[in-house]
Image (tube, rainbow, N blue to C red):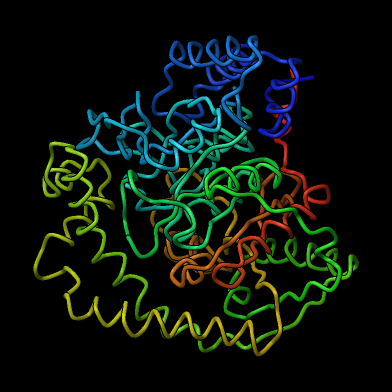
Length: 472
């Protein structure tokens, strides 16, 4: 039994049965973090606090008591989620000294279920990016190749889970920020439907689009964490793949990297052998309302929601102070644009985006699912494989120089804008070494369907293990 390879579900079972001590688990994972400290997965990890919490779990277990289904199981949190005892920096200098007075609801629910808060994970500064090449804390490094990014903005979360430093981490997803890093690091990632998981106590970008979500090595852990956050569990449905109707929309496939497409198509072929039905659907109605709403919503709400967070949680800094101290030129430019009357999104444009164009997008999705009788849409999680650290502006895609951010979020952003749930699975490796993810989006509120599909596919698509991190 090698502790770093065990999932949340496995650890919970072994600890509850008395076959493992929570202190044994935490000590093994702390050692792992120290061994791979150069990966920059964490912004902060209080090893002594972790050990004390684990010791209390073991003391309770010795008296026949447990805190809940995650008793003694370490879970880490992206550094934009308030966790009592840790700073919430959001990866930016202007918030480096902020210590919240309480847990965010998502952290509180998991800690009440027995989880040990296992530190804060590195992230793209203020969540505005897809590389986690953080100018303050350094880049999170991909376990498959340390010269590659982990994705973002929850890159440190994926980095920690893929390096076997922790079995699961809670990230956040506005336009793909859970699923992209999960895909880039060979993991499972889940974006809940907007509103399913609570967003209070999390440094925001968009009240309309933000949601926390888990990154893990097994879909069983995604399911377990979801049930604990939402407060109820359901019996999974077996054999969800037979007769599963999968939609393929050209917008999500036509411009993807050829190697990425090849691996994802191989997964679809495998699903068809398992009984799934694949159907091409017309996606043209999605594009216009998405383009008309996505950036306008995020950029307008970016200032409004961050100002509210800074005030509600007594951070002690103004939006302008945080913006001017941003370490990354690209992120600083975004926030300064939100300050300028010449570049900020006007209130009437924002209103049209949320009242007209986003509802049009949501209605288009409803029609696509209904008229084609499909259960999910499938697509490469990202058009590109993980790029090299430092390639922050552009990337070569099918022979053309294109913006890295656009290429990264092209596929995940549309469903995120509409509030859909999405899951990425580890599809395979390019040339045996570079991870690729395949995503499924379901209709709004159909999270249970997605989780059931993932549970059925777990054995066929295990998380990908970097050869350089083989068990010592």
